[in-house]
Image 1 (cartoon, helix red, strand yellow):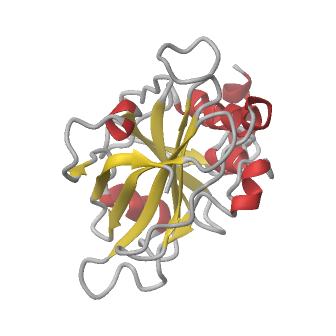
Image 2 (tube, rainbow, N blue to C red):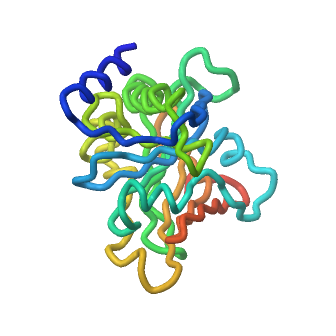
Amino acid sequence: MKKILTKALLASAGVALFTQAAGAQTVAYTHQDLLLGFRETGKANDLVVDLGAATQFYSPASTSPFAVSGLSSLDITAVFGNFNSVSWAVMGTKRLGDTGSNLNNTMWVTTPRLDLNTQSSALTQASSFSQQNPSGRIASIGSNFNGEPATANSSTATIQATGTGFDYSTFLGAGGNFQGTYLAANGSVESSTPSDFASGGIKYAYEDLYQLNPGSGSGTYLGFFALGSDATVTFSPVPEPSTL
């Protein structure tokens, strides 16, 4: 209710809210889904896509790369104008009361991968107490995503006005580390597409995916996402997830 009232107040104050397709269905978020988020400095809206259950990424049916649906190039154009210099990240979490064998406050988050052939340095794990803050902010992104209008181009994507206090950018934080949580020591969970990403043929940007179980040491490396300048998304699992 508070989220709805906030949007109504913004609209009455003359703040432009992004108009989604009239009569569009709403998006759904299920606990332990992974979310793909996009934002760009100076833009009035974020784009968030539900990629489905985390199990398909930490326990894939095969080790072959597979396409991940939900992102539309039309949504990228509508929100950002083009795909240049757009920041992106993938995240998910397990919270208290969720089903499954993973520990509460387990997280699945990405970190920038500089190129196709070079894996990133592993993200570090922390105690359940330390992981509960970023885990809670990921859960907040999911809960505020749930029930929002779907875009005209994707039934699993929504466009959120920034600055409402309930948007993707708010919970991710300016530093891309969920508002300065322990993950700040690892840098940002997001990376930006190159300034010429949208020109000169299809290009790719990469992010590595890690599972962070409450505890210590390095997170478990699960594989990497390849984001195409044509808005295709592919995930390449590792044959056997490791902490290397």
